[in-house]
Length: 268
Ligand SMILES: NC(=O)c1ccc[n+]([C@@H]2O[C@H](COP(=O)([O-])OP(=O)(O)OC[C@H]3O[C@@H](n4cnc5c(N)ncnc54)[C@H](O)[C@@H]3O)[C@@H](O)[C@H]2O)c1
Figure 1 (cartoon, rainbow, N blue to C red):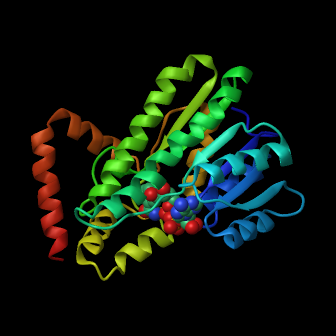
Figure 2 (figure 1 turned 180 degrees about the horizontal axis):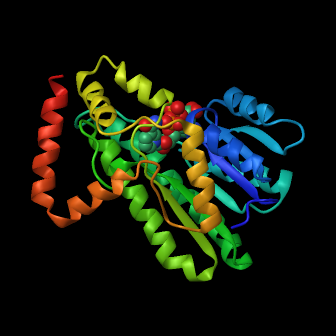
């Protein structure tokens, strides 16, 4: 899709990967609505995009259906029909096998928010024969995140939902890309590394030990390239494809390797 002149929403755009995607979309000529639970952060990112570019910051909790409805309505009111929706807001969730409240939060933010946004946008996208859903999942959605059950499960769900959207609506003009990075230099990563919770910290150390830490603007460049080429899988860490192939090739061998990785990093 040609981004120039399009209307885009980026959730979790107040910092990190979302802020970088919002900036890259705006630089490519999109009108961008930056949405975040932290309204001040969203407004600051929109303001930093500059007066010569169209960007607006909106406070929105993606776990709220009403907020998602208001967000899409605000984008339409400000710039016109939404062409690109980046479902990027996410939380790492609690470690281990957390209680139901923690599972609910991870499911609502990392998965249900994507499903609800798609439900709201699809009627207009199908009518116009045009729409782009960009899922920020994780390498954990293709592989696994050591120590974080709810993160692994919800990110797998996000990948599965992105696949389903592409399969079901791909022939009707709806495009889908799915971002699956390993470590990216954002607050989510640094918070987990410094977490007092040893399981979460071990998980973050596994992520760090497993590949290079990529900067958010590099990730955003990959996202823009995928939108231009209309390709599904976005892998800022190309080795994820090798690990994914190994997993499919011999699941038990892959599980043994993951157990070794988890054990070695937990004691590091
Ligand atoms: N940083 C990494 O290493 C990494 C790796 C793979 C995938 N990801 C994914 O990338 C996405 C962005 O993460 P990040 O690393 O930039 O993290 P981050 O914590 O720096 O930023 C996340 C942003 O989402 C916002 N947010 C959280 N809950 C929200 C909600 N309910 N409604 C609206 N906004 C909300 C936060 O306020 C924050 O601004 C997440 O989905 C994350 O799972 C991150």
